[in-house]
View 1 (cartoon, helix red, strand yellow):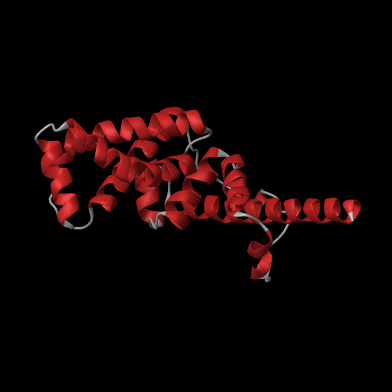
View 2 (cartoon, rainbow, N blue to C red):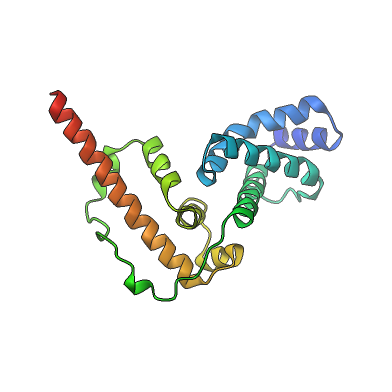
Length: 190
């Protein structure tokens, strides 16, 4: 932990408003990005951010100074998002996943990501069904295992794996569709 972070923590624990504001300012933009990945829109992300920082300030005395402060705050934001998700969505295990039609397999060409902007990818992720979006974020972006995801969402590991698989396929298909639309538009304009 850096001396700056130690100063922030001790100041926040002493209820110093200037250092509380500084802690918020220092971490809020990164944490807002995390909240945006889990939220359906900017308003919900702002609510998650606010609720997350309330929990950060309420629980800062529990931070053991083992590991990074940013990582600890990040876990709180993800837990707030998970709590919000559990409160507002229900995931049901799919009994027979073999009957679900998937249009394409994942493409062999990994250069597809070079043809699309990151904000477009994030927007497509936000368009995924809620369960797919949550599993994709937890697994691919935040490094949770399927076992941990299953525990957090109250689903089976196989449901987590199948939702991730479907999310990836839908994501790739939508990216391909967006790239095709861009190329068509460019061809029509050129």
